[in-house]
Length: 89
Image 1 (cartoon, one colour):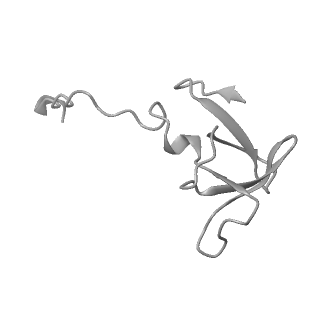
Image 2 (image 1 turned 120 degrees about the vertical axis):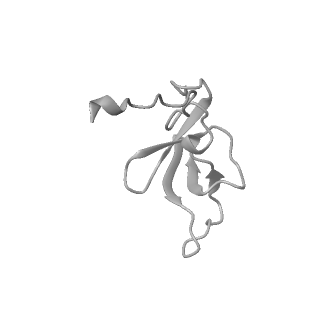
């Protein structure tokens, strides 16, 4: 396990069926939408849970970390933009 560079939370990387690793929250969460099979070397065969592909028995579910990380995504604007003077047009 490793820590998020943005917020410092502990992460678990789930190896998806595509071969890519998805950063998820470290603790399994029944409300999560990523299912993965636990093995001795981590969680593998991960996939996104959908209506057509529900969670499989024996798989753990996790929440993707980017859904919960406070430091990711666009930063909210803290001030209102200054008006542009009409002389520039």
